[in-house]
Image (cartoon, rainbow, N blue to C red; front, top):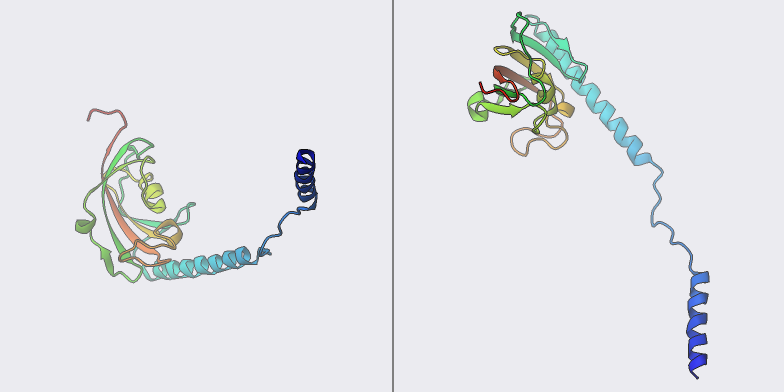
Length: 182
């Protein structure tokens, strides 16, 4: 009887192994969702760039420079001397304020308080991360950040909504060199 039980269990095991097939996915994706998402993003970026270009066109008093990182900027105060810009690990001391493209104040310098930023060692807006590295001590720059280098799809969970381009005026007050005792 013991042999019969073992043979029965063995046949069940071998039989079930040979009959089992891979499960098919419940749903198959054709990639259309990703393609549609890419198209929506292209339309969104084009609309934001159109709005930013209109802002630049209406602001004929200032010259705007297009950054390879996807934003625009204009010097409000430019330092012409050949002085240091912040590098990775340096500490940048800056103030900034945020406005909407129509010029409405979203966050004042007082609300945002003076900032201390360890270059490339802390998380801040992608646009600010790059923008601060082009600044010299004493400069003030107006940045036009499309949403993808600002607060993006998520917004800031407070005053800045989904996919909102912003104006960001930044003043670089000081730079401390990494490992400097100054």
